[in-house]
Amino acid sequence: MEYIIAILIVLPAFFLAASRSSYLLDYVFFVVALNRGIRRLVDYYFNGAFNPLSMISLTPLVVSALLLFPAFSNFHLLTPRSRKIANLIMVALAHGMVIGIMNSGVGAVYSLGEWMAGFGAFLFAATAPVSPRTADRWLKSSGYAALIVAVYGWYQYLTIPPWDAFWVTAVNFVGYLGQLRPTEMSVFSTMHERGPCAGFLAWAAIPMILHPRWRIVGGMFTVALLFSVVLLTMSRSMFIIVGLVVILQPALSKGRGMGRVLFFAALMAIGGSYGLEQMPGAERIQKRLETVADIQNDGSFQGRLEIFTHGIPWILSHPLGLGLGSSGIGAGRISGAAKEGWCDSGYIEVFSQFGWIGGIAFFSAMAQIWSELTRRIKLGGKDPFLFTARAVLLGCLVFLYVGNVFGGFSLFWVFLGISLNRLTMPAPRPRYEAPPAQPVMPWDVPPTSAFG
Image (tube, one colour):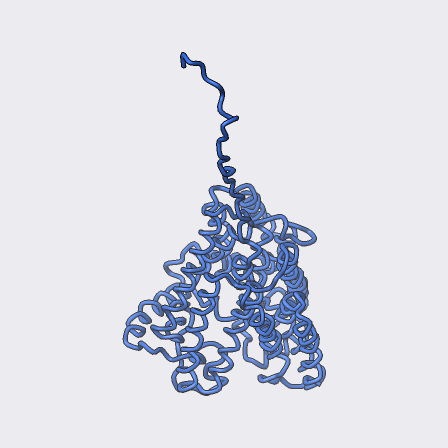
């Protein structure tokens, strides 16, 4: 049964890719959001056992990979600067793949698939010959997919559905996710973990906060709903990146959008002071959030700091890195690799996967993205994607200290791709030239008297 369902999920993506439809990216958002929930239903009702290598869980990689076909066919539509950025990222991936095959075998292939899911979305959004209306639709599709995740998240929190409890028990996550009782378990909704769930919801909310044209039904009330479920995941780190991007947006845009940021801050203040107290299980949530105030003594923060400080000497002594498959899902469980890389510190993980060559190429690409966005703005570009993409990029680079946000499909890859699309190019300024000088004929010269 799971093979049939996996085929049914992937089949529409094949048709959309074959027809070069822009709706392929919209469809990917929903597959990424819902596939693990579908998998748990199949395991519970049809298989009667948890299958760690279910074909359904691979459907996001397959449908994301299909983005590459129209993307590469439109590769020539990239501007020269954007083409250079894409080539730098491909250098990093190629180096990581070569080293990864030697160290991790098939795990490198799976890890490449995770990276290509994000990079494929980036290329698709950057090369697609689309209108601003289509680009806005992509962000709204992400919002509607997140809305489904949020609504189901509340249902999961209040009821603990049997198929979800079945999965939590099978993967030994009881305790880590709390207890299998209503309001006592961390929400993961339809996703495969609480962290990815929080990330998907937060990234879908960020565009809605920053510009009205990217909001879906419910507007800022929907944003509040998404963040209420981020709270239920008990994941604190996503609030950091949301706060960074929201603050950076007006700071990098000469105050543009400050009113929306202040409104969001007021909404969060009201929600934090009143709404949180009304939430079921509020005491457990508040206790988790209070650890942010004492970040210096927080075990998670100290652990990441230790990984970062120990990782730098390791990187300096391993110029080739360990390659793709040394960390993430592709490590250990897929390939059984003896050499397992770094995680929980994005900068260390990038260099451990890509080595010096790939790491420098990757971060050079990020610098080139910043340079190109700034150039377009200086040339008169006024598209909101240009201004917001700079805040998104800088926020991601700061957040990279906490974890690798680049190694998978995410809305921010799409956002960066749209910002480099030709649709954000500033309109050429009209050039006014003086008409050519006409020769002066004798009859055009006024007569003069003998007295001058």
